[in-house]
Image 1 (cartoon, one colour):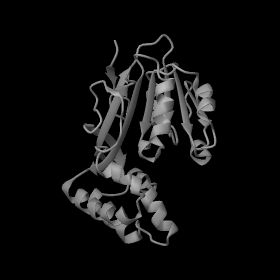
Image 2 (cartoon, one colour):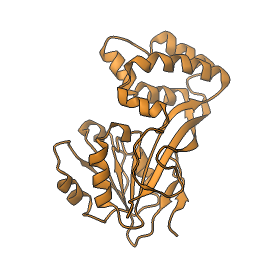
Image 3 (cartoon, helix red, strand yellow):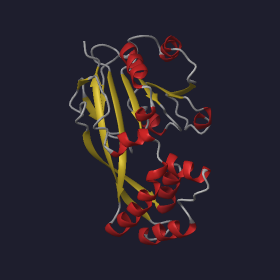
Image 4 (spheres, helix red, strand yellow):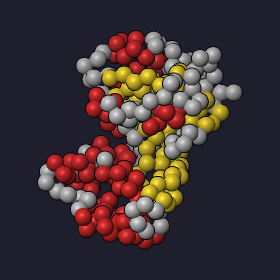
Length: 247
């Protein structure tokens, strides 16, 4: 039963880990989008984030609980909050692990995961494919964001190929060899625009007085999309690493 795969809506295939009361921890949960998908397959999901503002926008689900974990919290406090050592079946991180203090985070994961079955899965995407016309316009926009990304974002652009990942592979990518994935999503242009508007580079640029999503840029993207309300298939080009604690 171990290492079967699930594919929650909008996130990659994930391992199902055997347990009588399976518990998952979604780290850097943001508004809880990934946590809700994991909750379709796990009895208990805990979503945590260092940002209270993000958690205030969290999506509700009867099997998901959210907690604020400020950077001032100690490792022992976090472990106690989540459920104690060897209590977690699956740890997930969507679009966020490149921001973490990795040695600290990996130490927490090693203490929290059940042995030998518990799994850590991290994933991200670095491109989106819609159509040749839209993809060309979107690349021009994406290129304009490059000066405003934090240096850590280079790990995203490289597809996590240089991300340290000292865990035993479960067949879903390994250190230096992430599993490449296509994640399909149905979106309107308004939905797509909302997503790219939240990019940290777009927000940083705006704080510096540069509007990367000016009226003319938005109009060009909307035109090649086919209209603000048109729903199109978007393929997110994603990559994943998943593994167990090495014993």
